[in-house]
Length: 373
Image (cartoon, rainbow, N blue to C red; front, side, top):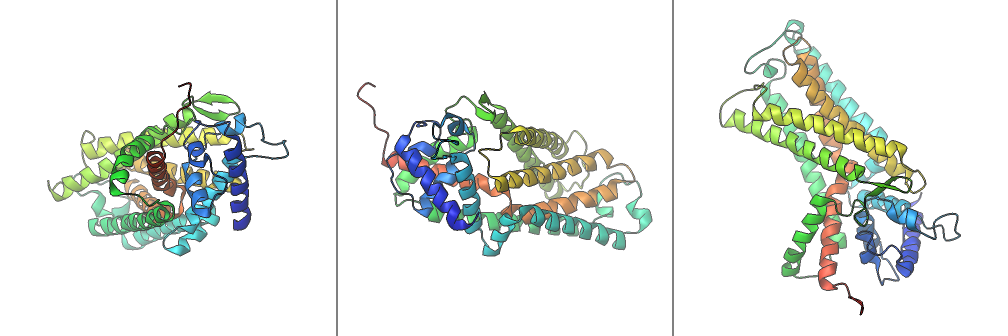
C-alpha cells in the first residue's frame, strides 16, 4: 500500500475510534487518542508504536467489517508502524530493508555466512579445521581471536549505532515540549509498561491470539524470549571478563557463567521464538498487516537460527565438526547484527519511546474522574 494511503487509512480509523471510545482503557492507544479530532503524521507514528497488537479492539469493535465503516485498527496501526520504522531509519538507506525484509535478511545473512565459510575453508588447513580441539584457545585454532572479536564487535557496534540513531530520530519526531522534571516523572511508569508488557493483553485479560479466546501465551513467550536474549548478553559479557581480566581463553567449562548463561539463554530463545511463531501461524489473518506478518516471521526465524547455531557449537565443541559449526555461528551472528537495524527488532526501542511519550501525556493531562467515582 502506498505511503499516502497508509497514513490516510490510519487517520480515518483513529478519528472513528476517537469518536466512539468503546475500547477506552483497553490499552495505551485509547487514552492517547481520546478527545482528538485530527491526527498529524507524528501522532500517527506515536500511536502506531503504542499498539502491541493484542487485537482486543478488533473483536470488540462494532464497526469492524462487514460494517460500512470497516474499522480495522490493528491492521491500520501495524501498517503505520512499519512505515514509521522505515521513515526514521538511520542511515536513511536502511528504509529499503523494511520494504523487502525477507530478501534483505536472506541476502545479508546468507551472504555473510557463505563468505565466512569460504574464508575459513581457504585459509584454515583441512587437518586443522576438522581436527578435534580441546582445552584453552581451542576455538582460536580455527578462527583467530583477533578476527573473531573484530568481526563480531564491529557488526555489533554498527547495530547499536544505527538503532540508537534511528530511535533518537523517532523520539525527536514524537517528543512533546515538556520539562526535564516531567520526563523524569514519566520514566518510571514507562519503564514499568515496557518491562511488564502491561499493554500486551489489552485490559489485562490477555491477547486474542486465536479468535475471541483470551490468553497470556503471547506475553509469556515475549518474556521468555527477552530473558533468553538477556542471558546470551550476560554470557558474552562474562566471557569478555574471563578473557581480558582473568586471562582465561575459551572454550570454558560447562559449569562456568559464560557457558551456563549461553546454554539457558539459547534454550529460552528457542522456546520463545517457537511460542511466538506458533501464535503467528494460527492467528486470525483479518486484523493483520501482511507485510508486518512477514517481518515477524523473518525475525523469529533469524533469532531461532542464531540461538540454534550457538547451542550447536556448545554441543559439538569437542568433535571434528566444531570448526564448521563455529564458522556458521559466527557468520549468522555477524549477519544478524548487520540486518538488526532494518528488522522487527527496532520495535522494542520505538515502543519504549512511545510509552514514555504516553506517560508524559498522562502527567500533562491526568485522566478525569467521573462524578460517580
